[in-house]
Image (cartoon, rainbow, N blue to C red):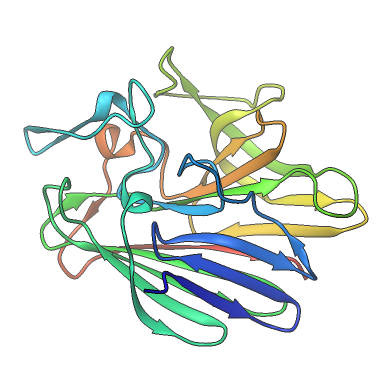
Length: 261
């Protein structure tokens, strides 16, 4: 069974891997922008973070007076949800667009399903995510792209963005709720109050601008081989600290656009 979907325009080509619902490749003018497949599912491509983003402390979700526990994937926490670890199904596929879906079954106690819509043209790729509920439930949506620091031509990547504040974290890297000005690089932090869209420039090769309907971003510049700029519907652990609820007929919806002009 073919588990990939290929989208192609004159300038751009993208591959969607149905095993995890991730954007596995994105090439513009023949240059691959994303880190290629590795053994760790959270270290390559651009994968969806559903039904939570970032760290879920100690794998515990507290909702409606109940405690629900999930597999520890980044000790001592459960990281990035689980939809990037399960199969997605084709709903509709064209030359430059695709719709895929996956159920929120076990280990998720609330049911529901997720949808991703991909739209590619010569100057951009937009991914729209939806989390649909069967009953009221906390949920988040985000994407975790791994951009190569060095393309096959040009100079190493430079990241430019303007954010007002970042979330202070505790010793376990969980947001405390306090906001503060940005610290010096390298960064591994959630920011908000974005004043300028994040832009990655590979001098003499390509410039990529990112836009999102969401107002939170995780910026991760510690790896020597990659830069991660992650739009998401809220800060890590929002499902516990300040949950946004999806309800039947009222999905959580948002999008990420990669624009290269």
